[in-house]
Image (cartoon, rainbow, N blue to C red; front, side):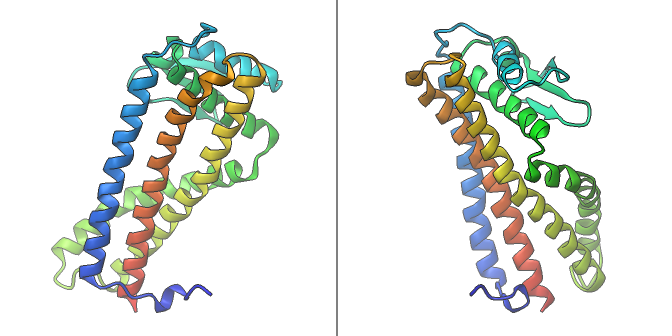
Amino acid sequence: MMAPLAFIFISTGVFYLLLILVFIFAIYAQIRVSSAYDKNSRILSRGGLSGREAAEAVMTQAGITDVTIEETEGHLTDHYDPIGKKLVLSSENYRGTSLAAVGVAAHEAGHAIQHKVGYQMLNFRMALVPATRVVSGVLPFVILASWFLIQGLTGLILDIAIVCYAVLTLFNLVTLPVEFDASRRAKVQLVNLGVLEPDEMPGVNETLNAAALTYLAAFVSSLLYLLYLVSRRR
């Protein structure tokens, strides 16, 4: 049985050791994403569909007609906006016909499918967004306060920090199944619709699986901070 958080103790030395390991893992995840994306962005899909066309095909198959597809600047700035019902793709994926472009675009279309079918974890994450934005704005002030106050991160400031990291950890935890499920839906549709051939899917898998590591790194990092703060609260 897992010990209650109140009985968890992480010494400062152990915390910094784990923090270094998490930092290394986060860097590894970023390197994997860049490497996988760069590699598969050079491999053109045989079908020749652009990311925009692939996303449109996936959403059309799912009966989604009220989501617009827009182009934006930046590298890997792709995302699905459930409030505005917009699927936003970076130029390289909007216009690109590579395995990476098609995979990323279809992944974002997977989020649109989740929204349409009422996928509970996506709804839960959407509900957490306002609170996540608030605590993300509060945390810098908490950190500054801990630096300038003599007692450091204790008392009320420590309690606020714990609440902030609890919200962030929960948000990052919920994000994991949301992202994994979107990728699963995307991969199935790409093959079923004939957008990609089965032997082209390893490139898509490599790209999307590498991206998933960044979400895992974010969760592990916020969880480590939360456990450390709770152990200090003891």
